[in-house]
Length: 277
Image (cartoon, rainbow, N blue to C red; front, top):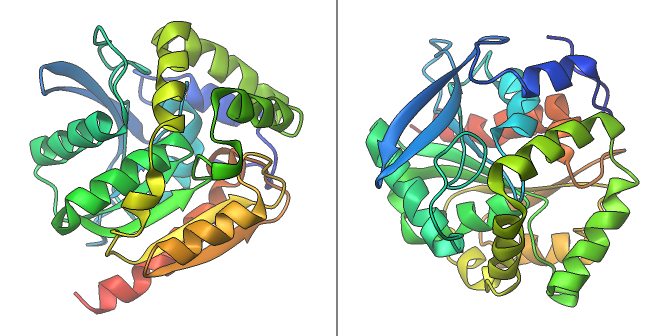
């Protein structure tokens, strides 16, 4: 698949994002019962390279769909898994919105269900909060961590502050992402999106960031209004073994609109862990 330049998202990416559960571009769908919920996962084939699996964790209001371009970009060198968190995408909807620790517990149970070796966890936006919580609580399950567009900046840690920044970001994003967002909000239900946002702004993410022991990459787009440079730098300082990367031209959805650049950064992060196996 030919991906678009950084900051763009074209018709090919849109078709791929909306394909599940049908196979597309080497990605297939699976459903497993995890902690009592029928959980959907979009995954690639194992390329046979012996490299660690990469697990992509989506953000608030969205699902596996907008991470599929990144999954395709990584699939040539790594087995890639993109689960839908409880209540989002094609995963069963529980009766309540999970907070960050409960999402992290579900993701830990998902890893156990797949019997994976230690993985590279990449979380975007709210998904970065979930990944940080999992890495802090289950360090043996994690080989490396990628925090892309981590929420939420303490200077705007309120529903109003985050919604305001997100509205600014919509003006900077590729317009063809809108159909995916609409589909994902319909699947999740607006009340769940709002309740999860409330959990996010009450989540003390700093307490988890300082406990991440794995090598970590902090990624943002240079045009990201949700994660300004000051917060990106603070995240990089809080995580003990972190380095930061900024992708020129990308806004908040850097994992969606700059998949080739993010995939290259992930491979660079994992290269030292492969030589030290």
